[in-house]
Length: 304
Image (cartoon, rainbow, N blue to C red; front, side, top):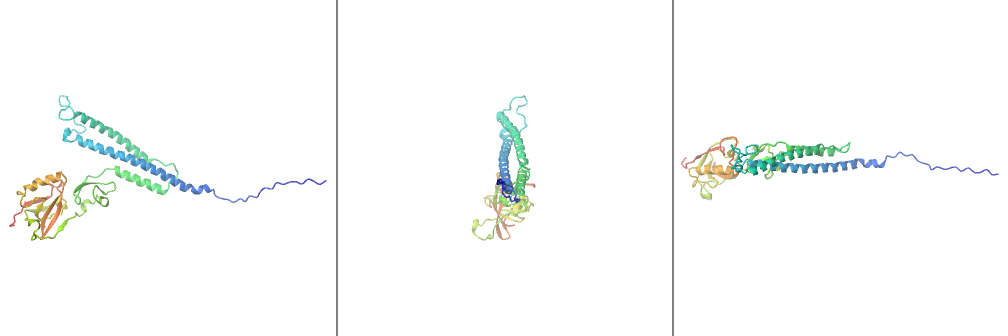
């Protein structure tokens, strides 16, 4: 009898090669993309809150200006709204003042809440244990920018180039003037003002042969006159629309200068200096010295 054949299960040969899991190769890229998306979302939320903050601050400032105006008797936030006998004051709109004060107090509460939300956005932890250096740098820069925007600002300065009072941007540049983003607020006083110069002599027939009617006999350092490049000894030919025919013993200058300072306007001054006529831009304004010009102007007689 022929013995039965034994069948043997043949197992396929398996080659044990040690391959790294493919899914791990995309983890870094995916994480960075997710982090970038989260960062953008946080940035948008912080910027939206910052816009609300700015809006509230502008509204609060406007309320204080109105409360301190002559219209409301300069009552501000703490002056009483009743007279000595306890009756509502008749010289102000009591209802309007109360409404403004109430709104101002509400703004303070809203402002505090928004600042807390902004801080929360900046300090919000990510959902990842590893944050790419690029994301870290972006978050740090945004945090520093927001901190600079919210920080105290220096007092406004007068810009001799534009003839305006200007304030500092968060990045140290100048706000509200042409090319202000290219200039430094800190170095504003060190900038040289632009002076238009005409070398025309007084022998020409232009400007009806204007005759000097005033003389500059003193210019204080760092004054409006100094920033306009006026110098001691300059002979004034024209001061705005004022010349030798209508200066009225210099009283016309005395009346014009305060009006210019109040309206924050500049005036063109034509002076005669060393056989040349110069056109200077002068901006009368309060400064740390006396007067609005920082120079002494005296009447000039032709025979001097």
